[in-house]
Length: 107
Length: 118
Image (cartoon, rainbow over all chains, first blue to last red; front, side, top):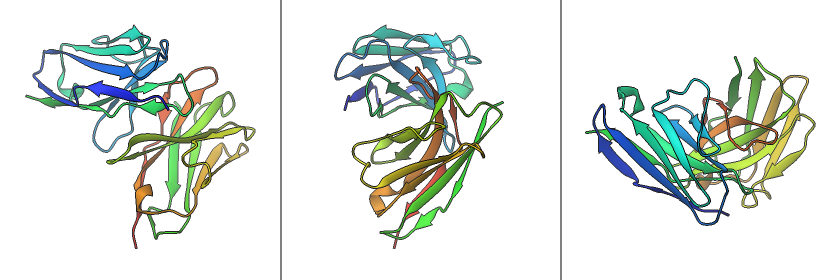
């Protein structure tokens, strides 16, 4: 299985800040990398697919870059509703695998 | 608007069989793989398996010996059976949708907490 490692595991930020979350794969996965947001008690919500494509309805302050093994999720101008846990997911292999998550807290 | 609703028993004893069903409304049932994913504090998000509307399925190698997925396309429903459960199977179980020739999950069910305890 491909192992996905996110960093940091947690971070604290303030409303208006810009944060970057990284995801690294143990082997090349092309651009088959997707990002999700999860709030407590809810299912994950798709934000970015294929590394950089914004899912319909997702605010443009979310953006993704990367290919191969290294990827980033950037949130520009944090809003109160953005404080959540973020997961990356690779779609290159079967079974697909997720990162361990990055928890974003209010500072 | 696509909606996934899920139901099934939330409390099981060790060695029992976990059974969950996911119903799909508001969209096509064909052209997608219907997937089960679980989430536990210890193992994070874990892919269990997927099935399409005609019963074509794939399973996680680590769970294959205990998992059966089934589909009832006439009702737009699909189901998960996981036998011989143990405490390690305690998790929130989600159903989700992935379109053919894509690899991301765009719609998810609300999740069902399944607890295995004697």
